[in-house]
Length: 320
Image (tube, rainbow, N blue to C red; front, side, top):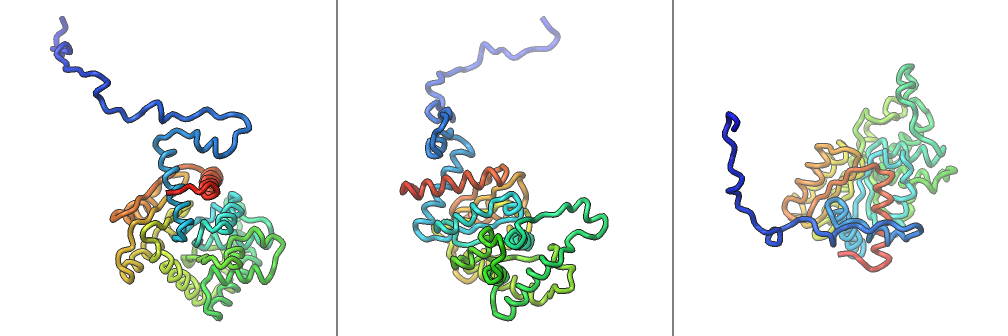
């Protein structure tokens, strides 16, 4: 016998597994994919577990919101455009799913560059070494010019830039989320942090115009947020700081003026977990009703998957 005493396992009190509550059951298992199967078959074949279950819930709530004409707001960082998802966002607007889009300033820059030149996103690591980073004059002229026009016409930054793209009709205008939003009458807002965008160092940048149009966009977004209660949806794709902060302040203003704005649903989609999306979008806004979700994955996979599932649900009359 060893030096140290051991517990007497013969005294363990056991019970039958049949009396135990189990969290996983075989009925929740996924179905193996088949070659040539439809998207609907793939979607139904996902396991009824964890993130797949939560994604199904969010899809159902988003389809229900679209059907009931409740706001479905997309808050998108610039990466959404850089990985080629503009056509997906445009389709969701065209189908009446997304009723409002909010970008940070970089999103507006990438949207405009795609529209006018069919290309965007420079090699920062190389161009920052010689001071060429952000010095494309055309981009500055377009965005700063749109801000000045918007201030003169009493427009928000997003609508002003969208209208300018429509008026100029550049070669790739059909790829512009802002232009399509302007044509559809979908509120598209741009929330600028002065000094963060490549157009701000240029002499054409007018702080008063940029500030005025971006502030107007904040108030437009707050108006949309005020209607989220009882079934609206907020989808955050890829902004780790600016848009979560903007959304939280917009929600506070909405609740201050409209009273209880609760019972809505939020989701953060990103490649990593970040503090502000988790706290300012997923947790705090839904603490008094509704639910928040977090999904980890690459935008270029998660957004088409989510969009396809919502459109499929709408086409078949499903949704909570």
